[in-house]
Length: 391
Image 1 (cartoon, one colour):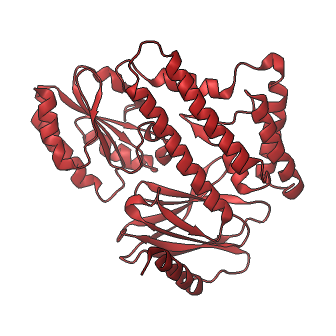
Image 2 (cartoon, rainbow, N blue to C red):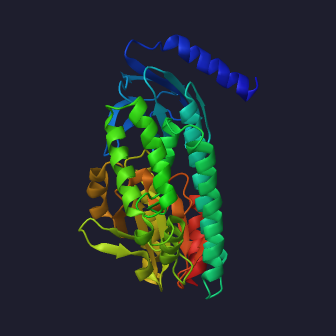
Image 3 (cartoon, rainbow, N blue to C red):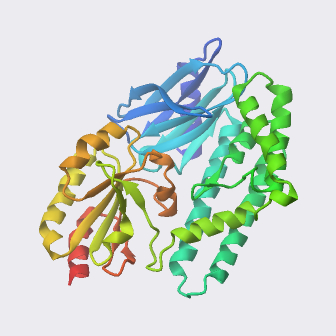
């Protein structure tokens, strides 16, 4: 059976088996290859993220969540499994279906029943592609004159921003997709910054105006309205300090060290800030992981074997935890012999995007000069590659 036909059949069966109820929305689907894993449903509020439901998946991976409908405005949710996530827009009592497979669920999934969720999927993929391109430009650039690099980055970001504006914001400013687009970020810097760019402030104002008419009592509307008004005031010609794209380029450029790696500076379990570049002179395994995963105990046991074998020769590990629950990191980090730091942004980590990490665990080998020289796909490759770099 063709994949498209199989997906359609599964979605049809889910619609029959998981019927929506009055005043509630339904989110159902299948996450294959996730037997025994916990699937979480997170509510993405405008000021906080909250887990509202969960289920342990079986070998088939069928799930069905039902939550109270949002009565005054659209809302946003996230499906999350083992370090991977899918962002969704929910409007009223609709039924949204997702078909995915765990290893690649965050970059390859089918969505039905929500046009805005489909548009968000497009935006996320374009955002990942942009970050991959920026990282590639920076890694390949060797000239001490960074002006040409910054110009190329600016041109690439300009194209992305123009596409987001013309495809996702201006055609329907009242949509959830338009609202979502306003808050896209690149390297921790908002793509649309109404307090720094006049045209961005106008985009915020366009969406806020439509939401004022359609969702006058919504908390999101009040927040967006205030942001838009403040932006229009602050972006008067006398207050304009360069375009937001130029700010993104500058900020991205500031993180790129002459050594060819992107700096990471995060706190360890004692609260001390640990910089990746301080390890120059050692062979470093940069590792992105989450301790609240099924793979973590055996994975860290494998890393400990490598650390014990090569630490005396100048090898160390800089491990970044992106656990959504900080307590899992705090319980584990003190027992590890290497540097373990925590990124409270979790799956929204800027560092995951900058290093083009699409699934965890993800490892990078850095030589003594501070250059990324390898990204091993298999753990059994690490031993020989570490030994080669230590020679």
